Amino acid sequence: MTLEDFVSLVDIMWLDTVDNADRSAYNSGIFHIVPIAQNTGDSRRMSEIHREQYARRKPEGDQSERLKIQKGYQKDLESFRIALDVGVTYEQKTQNKYTEVMAQLTDMVDTPWNRMELDLQMFLSNFDQTSYMDMDGETVDLSTGDTFAWGYSLHPVKASSETYRNILANNPRVSPGSLVAMQRLVSENSIDQFGTKIVGINYDILWTTDDAEDLKVVEEFLTSVGSVEYDNPQVKNVNRFKYKHVVLPRVALTAGGVVDTDKRHYWGLVSTKFVTAYLGIWETPHVIPFFDKKDGTDNMETGVRAGYGACVVSGRGASFSKGDGSA
Image 1 (tube, helix red, strand yellow):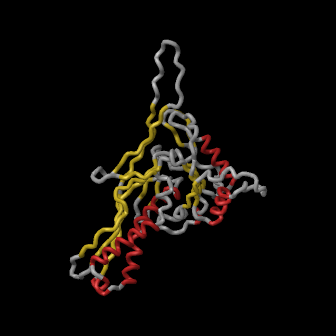
Image 2: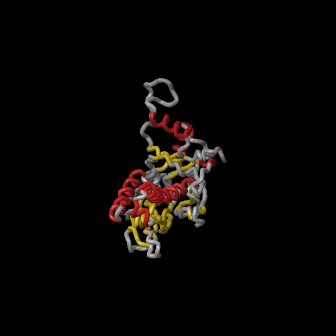
Image 3: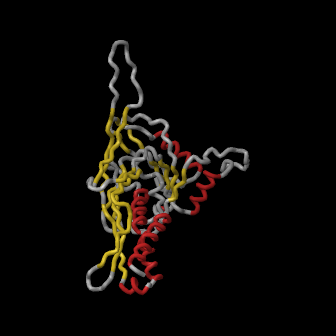
């Protein structure tokens, strides 16, 4: 192959792989995607601001009350880069070792998306932790702006002594009964920085791992024509179309990508509008041009690069269960 043909092949494979790569967390709505322009710094401060919800009585002739505005917690998105390179020998380039070359490129082009997915899903896999160590040995900060884990039983607010929880008591597995309990949890624990209940928060995402039993339960619960608890087909299933079901196959993994059966039943509810999880994209995953190593081997190299960062500002808009029955 000529170099021009080879470069075209890489570009075609890259575009094809992007279309087919697993981007379940990226496209889920759980994380707000924030594109970051070049030359604008390597961090972004994400914060929340609440305004009081109710107007006040105004006595005749008196001034009206001033609207109270309360800044909530904040957290920084901090960028880091990921990369892999692959070499192409002179013989591969000139003698058309097509199968070998194709295998190398196929193994390479989806790796940045896979890593981004793993990093995002580790936030959910470790929702009750404030940090974890990633596959490169780096400590990743998972804490929210209040210093506690994303999932916690006593999240504080700024302008009140009230607290809220977003872990379902006793961590039940996903089921019709536990979903009702989770709905009650989010209804009673959706408060603003003044401790006032926020009415009308729509939790529209139900996420699970790829555990076969849990997938079956959710599919029956959400998509059956009649009520899942009755044989009468004329009974309307009130949960049909209530949630978007998001399957996250990397939640039940370790940071190194190894199966972690202790997390196979993790699940939760998320409000796409109120969740405060962010993914900043400094450098969209891409393939770099071929370059000559200039080391006397006549070899060429190409590679993949990406730059991003993620954070969670507060526990608001997301609720969790480990599904293991723990207290």
